[in-house]
Image (cartoon, rainbow, N blue to C red; front, side, top):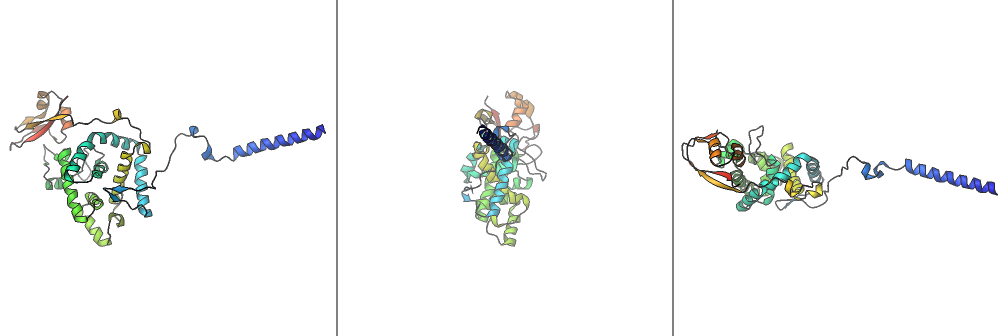
Length: 301
């Protein structure tokens, strides 16, 4: 009797150990405790309604949904770039938002500026410059001064006003803000030709060059992430965002032959700070033989 009980106990114990071993070896890798993983990579939530300038993005079309998904993934996992965009938005969006509202352009177009330049006064290989990336010829069409001493493509307020005028013109031509945004990237003539050749009715119908094909989706992705940073894992405290530069006074300048270094010193600031507040002053001097009036920003503090 004792022998039978011992055999039973041994058999039961062996079965129990075998069960534990089998369970351990068959545990899927994804069930490993989260704290042992170096990082967690998740897909983005694409299953909700997206809009641009109050125009619905037709994500019920699989191609549209996947193109938007691509830009959301690229920008939500392009950490350093997106963090800088969020920080700079705190500095420049208030000015851009005010001008968009004044000119009657939807607020979403501030994200077009993010897509164009990352809110920096950059220069493209094609020669487009500033936050809004104007080419020299287009800038002059919209009354922006561009010469060896002054380049108003770097003037945030004036360039934003010029961008608004362009976008309103394209909206009137193409009938939608989405198409106006596409023409900002591709050009009015090129976009019109593609509409005619492909017999399309909207941006989402067209097979365009790679840059313009991604362009609207990049803007929408910027809007989604910057509007909901925590949702995409970006936890940036207010004190880490770049401060506004709106605490300034305008000095009227009409003189000729101004040396900007001397001008800065006479107004209690450095040459560097003068250029930070007025990046459109691209030379160390201003000849101004015509006695044109300029407003130069000087920080109050």
